[in-house]
Image (cartoon, rainbow, N blue to C red):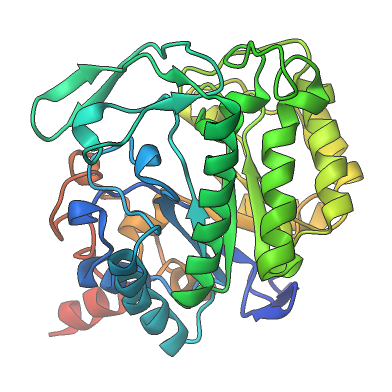
Length: 369
């Protein structure tokens, strides 16, 4: 039998992963009052067999708390709350990065603390609606165009969040530059119509991301930094523009110069978005030589094939980890996956549809008796 590459160890920066399976970041909305809690710690602990866990999007600022009940990492309570998660994952010999996600214009004031402001590179309102606990679905609001002071303050918030992450026990941080959130809002000329040094050219539109990467890498170490991108993605009211290929070629090459731990490439074709062409993936691979994570509706079989081609070093799985907390063990033993998933409970506030999915070995044991 051919040895599984997916289940083989992998050196990521300074840390050794037990396998090449990554648990992709997924918003789950269980952080009441935006504070990580023990329910979340139990959820991540159940999935700590993954070579690497990347947490749900976690805001570096009150201004980035666009969704109901998402966690932050900008105050003491949040740092202490996250320590429960990192402790339990590490106790199980897992590794975990926190994803820093500032929602930017994808937001609503009812989801934000008093005094927070909806910010974006330009005052362009996103179409669509945002769920709020108080009034359910509400239209997205028009954001405030960021001043240079806002930009500098936000960059500092990202830096402080990265420092807080290390204090909370995380192995590193992933910058969310995908899915139409703040960093991608700067990258795209459809959401960034600025005429200053943060708008216009590809170099200017990528500046916000690259400056944040540089400052965080200097502070916590480049081997503890990753970036997630989603070229051709449509989440967050993103749309196609002719410079996509050259934009991400530029970003990939400059992230390589920064020598960060990894680049995480998301293909949302399975969710209805245009696929990321193989040529685009190859361009990114050619320009970024460090660890490349690919994510996008992979099965165990397709993940093995992708790793064998050398295009990817690690493969991220999202939804299969929701209803298969023992996904790695199922892969290793060729056990069937649980296909029952409660999508209506993805973003609720309880353990139902979150930490109550059964383990395969328990199902087998129950059937014996």
